[in-house]
Length: 235
Image 1 (cartoon, rainbow, N blue to C red):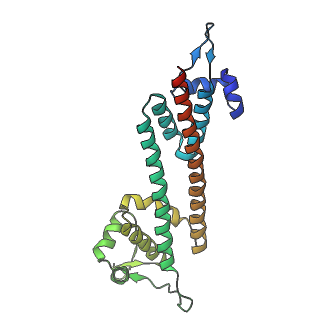
Image 2 (cartoon, rainbow, N blue to C red):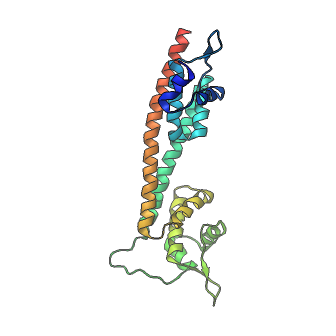
Image 3 (cartoon, rainbow, N blue to C red):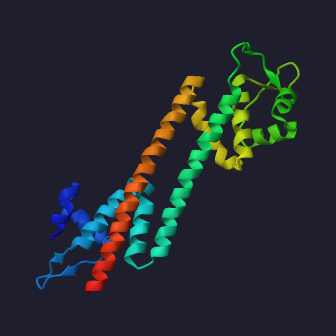
């Protein structure tokens, strides 16, 4: 196959295929006596694998996986894949923890919502924490309580209480404060419980799509390893 033959089924240019070869994403092609590249089914499998790995693991990881496979470092390539699967599982567990925290904040049908500010002592008691813990979370930028103008004491709004519950739930699940900060940032953009639930559902759908992409990428990677072995046997 010529570069264009390899590229056309994927809507790529022949130059893109040559660039992928130069980057180590495709194995080096043999040359004809006149200097033209000669691609085989192994190269076609490598290209399909790389394109399948991108939505599953990201472009940088996909490139790393392919260059490792093409230099015989299969164990290292599989480690990159395993790490990405572990990150996906962590993302799922994070969503579960956030949903649990939001569920705990949902008032009972006969419970009247209150808009009165909550003191640090009352919030700490509610969560089973020490006030110093809430102050530490504030210092890390996770909580932003107001100050009572008369007393200077911290006061927590319903949004602050929601954030504290989420931080508490994620901390119990083993998350570091630095890992929690970006998640809270996303949830703060949600203006209501319904919009927060919608944001979580959207992220869960993205994780589902990525998991399916990982299945497809795994199949293509397995096929590519088979092609590698077949060409090695014939060489």
